[in-house]
Amino acid sequence: MSKLKEHEKREHDYSINALLGEVSKRSLRNFIAYPYQFDEIYPVALKIYQKRLELVGVTLVWESDSEEIFKQLVRYFIGDSSGVYDLSKGIYLFGGFGLGKTLLMHTFQEFTKLVEDRLKKADVYFTKRSFKFNPCKDIAMEIQRTAKTDSLNQYMTEIRCFDDLGNEDEKKIYGNDVNSMAEILLARYNRYQSGGEITHVTSNVAPHECSEVYGDRVGSRMFEMFNHVYLDGSDKRKKH
Image 1: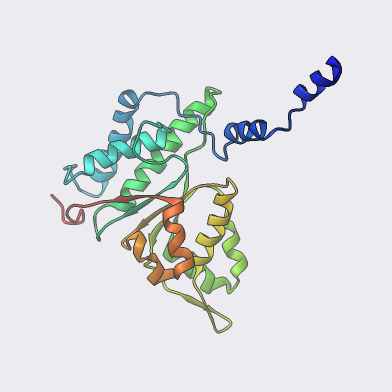
Image 2: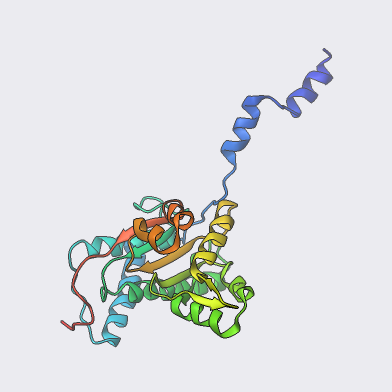
């Protein structure tokens, strides 16, 4: 073989090793973290959380392992890979009634938006972590009002947090039961598998119980799409 042909072969390597190397280099989700260390950005998230608690007349009191959960969520939302949560998955925040799950996720919605607005102005690159917030009951009511499953399409894209999953009712369209959240979660799972946006959830329903509410197809996907974060403690609605 001539030196020229050997050179061409090296330039266009089609060996198994070359293919394996190419797969290793590929990733559906490459994250660029916020350009902050945990210790310097943590007080910002904590201040937002405290102010939101104050608005509902509650003083911050860490219970059980809630402080560690909060710290790990800060690491997650800034894209810190040293945290315990998988950055390629969403957050499934669950626990009993009144523990402040919604307030906690609203805190990180405000936190990520605040940080990203500043980074955009400074022309700094990062992987988007901010998200939209959608109460599941509102989505179910919208289905009833419009009587069209097409209205669900708007919830299939972008990073979103679906609040109070499992507490919405099935609605009927032309006499047929439509479980709006099951449809949305399945569609978002398919997008996620192709490198699409992650999904966040708050719920009183444990992930392993989702099969009972939404069927096995949805239930089995709860373990692929989410980091499961159990929030324990006392009812935040009972003011300290």
